[in-house]
Image (cartoon, rainbow, N blue to C red; front, side, top):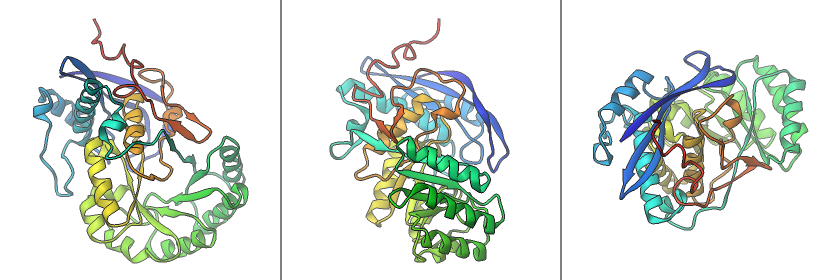
Length: 347
């Protein structure tokens, strides 16, 4: 197994619970299987995964598929999920290429989807700016829009949600993402507003550790989706507590495509939806996440339209967003020969 570090600037800084980030730093991973090279990506994001240094250390100790790290932490996730994701994705893409199958076909229990619907994301902004961004997304063909809330006074956010519904029309699916910003009283109030406006779900209304609090919020006429809680409490605890109507699954944070599908199957058995998203990854991990989403039956619109957040990338994207959907690359592995140059180590 070989690794190659990279650093990619974002077009504009991204606010996270651990502070703003202006670039994404990670590792391109190459694994050879049956004479075929597969590619993976390990791009850690503190707060979701291990640190860059921890990821580098974990990758340096791997020698091949047989050395994928299996140790887990208190939440039941791999202790080094980004490193494990890079290695697992590389192994899976090599095996898929050797079998002459797309990664989605290799991973899926049934015939995978040809395309995956994706949501547009509308960031925090004034009421007018939020409505305008929603209209633009709908005009571009997105049938699902997610709006960021929680940074403003709840009264202002309620007005913003109403403006989003008016701008989107009745046929567009809407989601709101609070990133754990509210207390219980505020969350109840805002979920009632979202239910009134026929939003599909509100994502992470309470802090991530409050799993039981999220369980109590369910049944108010709008779904509850959990994202950050999967990183802190872990999928098993979230599912055992019946705390979510949907899980927002990031393969990089869960430890790889196969582990993500395992979580998705467990969720499906409990009647919980799964939405696949990225951690603002480079093109290898993004395309890998597209294949994961395509391998899931009847997956809702996913949070995979994140490539535009990067000012540069490792390679041209073979799976761009077009009309609110991404066409799943059909070639062997990730995208046939699209990444042939990356499969060769630099001289």
